[in-house]
Length: 152
Image 1 (tube, rainbow, N blue to C red):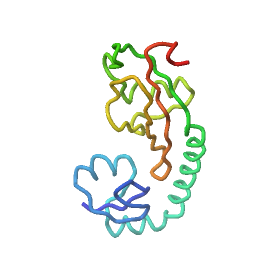
Image 2: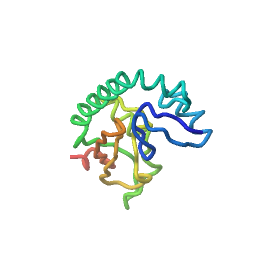
Image 3: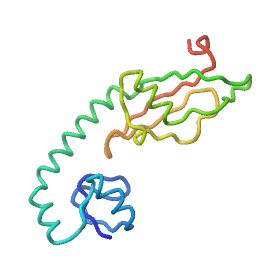
């Protein structure tokens, strides 16, 4: 299936690119989320007529994401969890836990924008990448501790 991208999508293309994707990805994700249009003559004409509006909306979203990234970069979140003497957690820290900690800190970030390199199963400090916009990443430090004494 060929689609016209309405926004930049990592590892796929930029605004206005005509790319070939799998049918399910295009039909179930890109088109319903208004990230792409089916590639056809009518769709291409419609896209070209609206191109300046789409690029303007994308620039506005990118600027908004850049201001949020300025606030989030370097932010440290401290999560207290029960752990053994060796520092292994009883459970793990998930994307949901980080999203809740960000919400408590006053920054509401959807879980889909939080990327953890691997499961957090030990006490320590971990960098967590946030994709606020396709072109705007941010990094938050997550510190997992056993007690308030360790947090200080």
